[in-house]
Image 1 (cartoon, rainbow, N blue to C red):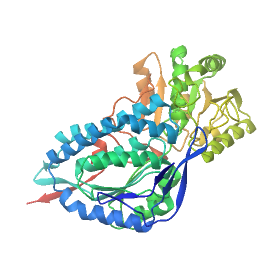
Image 2 (cartoon, rainbow, N blue to C red):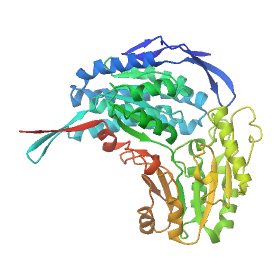
Image 3 (cartoon, rainbow, N blue to C red):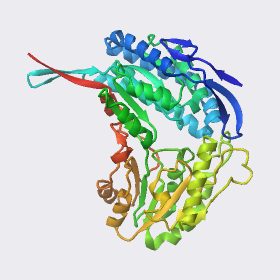
Image 4 (tube, rainbow, N blue to C red):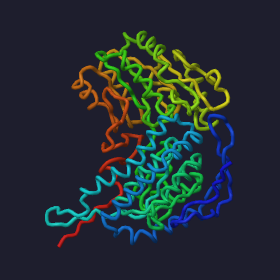
Length: 472
C-alpha cells in the first residue's frame, strides 16, 4: 500500500504540518490501495511564501528559458507515460485507452504553450503608449479528480509560459496520480519555488489559497457551487479568478442528420470519461416525430459504451470515482423514475458481474421535460436525458434553458445550417458533427454559471498576465 506522506514545496519533498490521513480507494474493487497525509493552512502558507519568493527571479526569465522548461516538462511526461497511465487506471478507474489519450494531451499542453509563447506579445505599442503584459504573480490552482494530469497542466503550462509561480491544490482523491506527476515535475529541474503542490481538503487548503493576500489569481476547475465560494473568498483581496465550472451540455440532433451515426455518437459524448466530465452532452434534443426511432437506436447502440474493468481495452465506461459519487448517480436515476421519465436502458444498481466496484449502468431516459431534476442538474455520471422538439427554434430554446453554458453539440447534414444554430446556442465551445474536442488552441470555458475566463491557447495565457500601460 502506497503512503503519500509529503508535499512539494520550494523544490523539495517535505513532511506536511497537517496530520489528517485519508484512505485512497481503487474504485473498481473498493479496496484501499494507499493513504495520503493532507496538508493544512500552515503548509499552504509555506507553499505560497515559496512561490512569492521565487516569483521575482522567475518573472524575469527569458522566453527561451521558459520555452526550454516547457519542452523538458513535455519530454518527461512522455518518458513516464506508462506509469502515469497505470496509476490513473488504478486510482481513478478511467478506461485505459482514454487514460492514455489524456496523458498524451497533458504532455502536449506544454508544447502548445511553448508554441504560443514564441509569438506572444509581452510588449506592444498602443498609440503613444507602451503596453507591457506583466505576469500576475503567484497563481493558486485548484484542480478536480476527473482528469488529474490534464487539469494540472492546463494551469501549470500557462503559468510557466508567462513567468508566474504557482501553488497547486489537486483533488485529494487523486493523490497517487499527483505523486507520480510531481516526481516528473521534479525531474524536469524547474527552479525551486516555481511549482508547489499541496494535497489537502478544499475547505482547508483551497480556502487558504483563495483568501491569502499573496495569491494574485485563483484558477479553479470544478463544481459551480465551489466556484461561487472561491469567488466570494477572493473578493476581499480583489484576486483575479478563472473558473471552469459545471455543465449540462445539450446535444441537438437536427431533423436532417444521419441518425444512424448521430445517436451512437451521442452516447459516446454523454458517457465520455464514464460520464464524469463537465462537457458531457447529457441532454439529447431530438425531433418529437422521431423519438421512437431514437429510442430504438439507443438500445441497438449500447454496445459502443461497454461498461467494465478499466484495464480492458474494450471498456468505455469505468466505475464512479467513489462511493459518494456512485450514491449521487443512483439518487438521480431514482429521481428520474419518480418524476415520470421513461427508462430506455440501464437503471438503478450495478451492472451484472460488476458489483465489486462503483460501477453504474449506462442509463438513458426518454420523455424528459426541462423541469425535471435530471434535465437541470449536473449528474456527473453516465446518465443521458432525451428531450424532444417540434421546431428548430424550440430546439434552441431547450438547449439554452439551463443555468449552464459550457459546451454543446449539433448534428446535421447541412454544416451551414448547424453553424446558424450554433450561433444562437449559449455555450463556450460547440462541436458540429463530432464528439472529439480536437482543437487545443480554441478557448475552453463557459457562459453563465459554467464559469469565468478561458483555458487553452492564447486565451489561457492571457488569463495569467495584466496589461500595464506606460506613457512617455
